Image 1: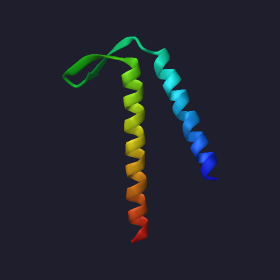
Image 2: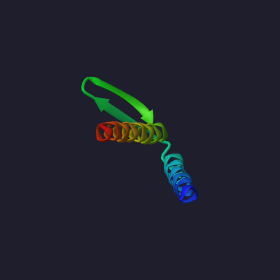
Image 3: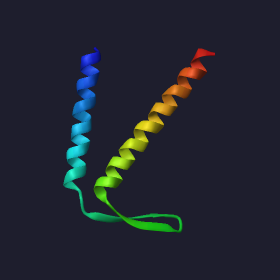
Length: 68
């Protein structure tokens, strides 16, 4: 089972990386009063990384709550 999960993780990472490489042109990002121009590759990879970190955090919090 460990090999299946590792393989799926590698395949998913490669798909995200290929998608990001194909979208290198700059885009404007705005939040409230703040705005900047950033390349899509950094936006996609950054969003992916933040999603993984927040998902991991939610799982850890749920585990701790269920243990009590």
